[in-house]
Image (cartoon, rainbow, N blue to C red; front, top):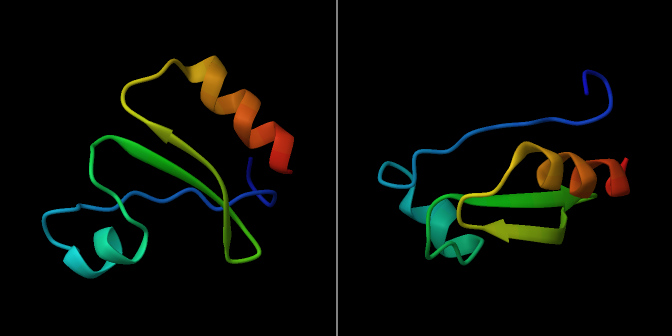
Length: 59
């Protein structure tokens, strides 16, 4: 997804501010953000195809 999406990882124990800002209460949590707005969220373990489907819907 190079050039189409930025994918990052955050240590929730070291970043209390981000967990509060985005309302993250469970891990793992994947946020799909477009133009600064949360468009979708996946909470809990999931398979690769589900994540790819959600990502492709936004790019």
